[in-house]
Image (cartoon, rainbow, N blue to C red; front, side, top):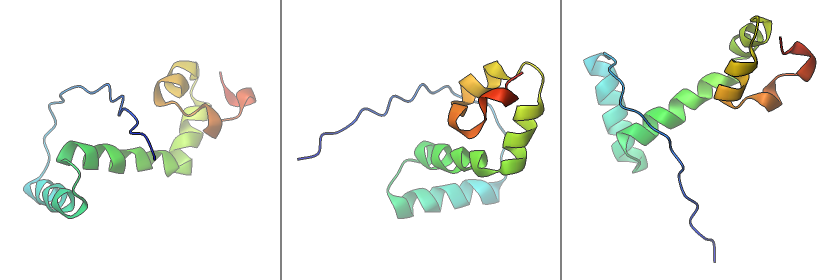
Length: 83
């Protein structure tokens, strides 16, 4: 038997404006995957961390320790690159 793990989502409401098309995409993808719209957005946006240029930009920022900790990407950056 596999036990259910808690989601541990520390979530906040945000006030973003998105297009009608994007709302429809999220809505239908949510319906397709049977996840909530919030879960779909959360899972998709996490994929931004696969952008190597973004990770490199973070590595090159001065005093990047806070960013690295907040984004939980310690494993994506080398210790010597932390400013």
